[in-house]
Amino acid sequence: MAAGNRISDRWPAQIAEDYYAYYRYRKDESIFLYQINKFFNIMSSLPSTPCSPFVMKKLLNELERHQLNHDDLIYNEKVACIVDQAIIQYIIRERELEIYVKTFIDFLIENIELLVAKDAAEDEKILLMHLIYYLKYVDNNKWETLIPYTEDLFEDNEVNKYYQIQIKQFCFKKDYSDFLLNKNNIRRSPYWEIEKMLDVSYNVEIELYNAFSSNNKERTFINS
Image 1 (cartoon, rainbow, N blue to C red):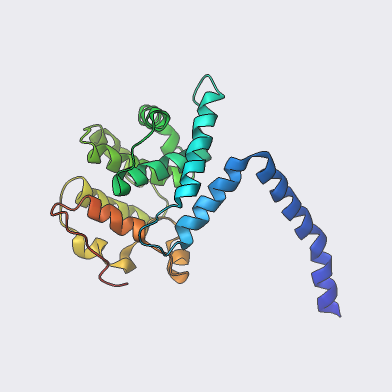
Image 2: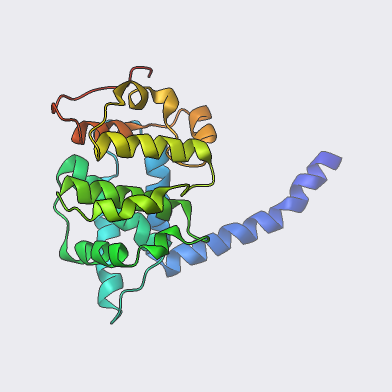
């Protein structure tokens, strides 16, 4: 009975939280899409689908509407998420970038301090890494000017090490294949220990590797 009372005592707060979340999603669809996209990227096991095409289209529509509704570019973490997904799609799927996405990319490159500020979200720091890879992919030498910002970018040294090795492989053409193709070495975010326990899909990481592979030969993880 006591246990039952404790559970029932928690229900009002849980219901209130659910209704608040529902209210936020109804008020701003982009919040809902942003969360769906994050969950999809974490749990997806489909090797050919880093982001649902339907969700990606909706996210891009939100970004376009976001830009049209403001005279000046308004940047926030949701924008970072959408731009990051667009960059990934461009590199590994050769999906053309819309003009408004390129506008945000140019804006972020010129205002890189937004991505390296002390209060920057982890998604924003990851976007910085992908901006470097994007610039390298399109043969824009500006990627070199962004490299210094990556030093100790993350609070987790394991994550810093992982991205520094990725940079050496993707941008400086060093061979760290054995390390990057070992699934156990992936540290793409500070939550890597949780991701490992959940057996999170790392398809995007291997597809990025393949996109920058000099011999254009698709590879898979050594330890899967």
